[in-house]
Amino acid sequence: MQVIVEHILRISPYERLVIVAELIIIGLVVYAVLNFLEGTRGERLFRGMVLVLFTGSLVLNLGVKTFGMDRIAFLYNGFLLAVLIVAVIAFQPEIRRALIRIGQTSLFTTGSSRHISRGIDEIVSAVSQMASTRTGAILVIERHVGLGEFIETGVRLDARISSELIKTIFYPGTPLHDMALIIRGDRLLAARVQLPLSEGESTTGSLGSRHRAALGLASGSDALVIVVSEESGIISVALDGKLERNVTESQLRRYLKEAMEERGPESLQETGAN
Image (cartoon, rainbow, N blue to C red; front, side, top):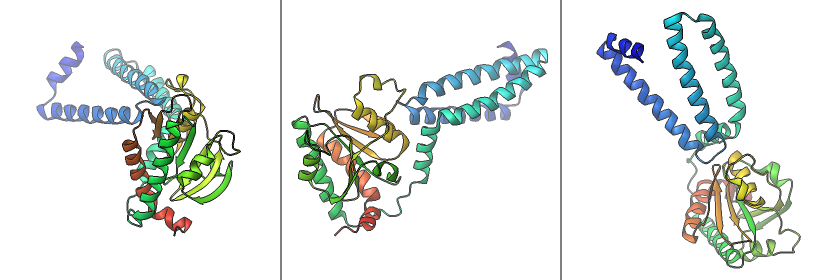
């Protein structure tokens, strides 16, 4: 600590200002990353990496300057390269989600709001009624990232959104009630779709398979996933790798409005809505 203080006292005021600016930028970057990773499995891993790298760099710099530990410095550089490779592998879902956000565009956000509004009304009506009867359901709203690989695992429908049809699909005992329903634009695209289950999350221990599937898909895509619990009737929404429980009807409508209006015109053109 004394070495650090002496070094700071020796540098010019301009250099001190640069150091302060660098620390602020680093702090903002770390805060932004932690905020993005909040609630995901990468959060604790990132905190640990920051602690190890910061402590290691501080000790190493002091050691090299004080005792000339050049060989340890060389090994530490190799360690940093290994950490970088491990980080890319460990943070693959988070990196993919970040790239999806960067690549998203809002240039095509105008179009037929009538179809979008109707679709939202139908979904909200179906979800609310299924929640009141505790009918388990999982609905996926496709956005910019295509879900073709998952759609192929289910039964193709290509039917217009209808509250009655959604409730019929998830009615207990029907052939299509299990697993997920994927919605694109104003079309019910496929039912009985198998989704990947989220693993390794600290929050998944108390969650059922529907909520884990919702988190699994929301962690690897930009899809909006709606879950109705058959045990409690609680409505949950998964988005960007995070799960929000006890969603109200007004909150659900807002989520759907943001998701469907953002992708709506493009999907309407693709499906030829009329």
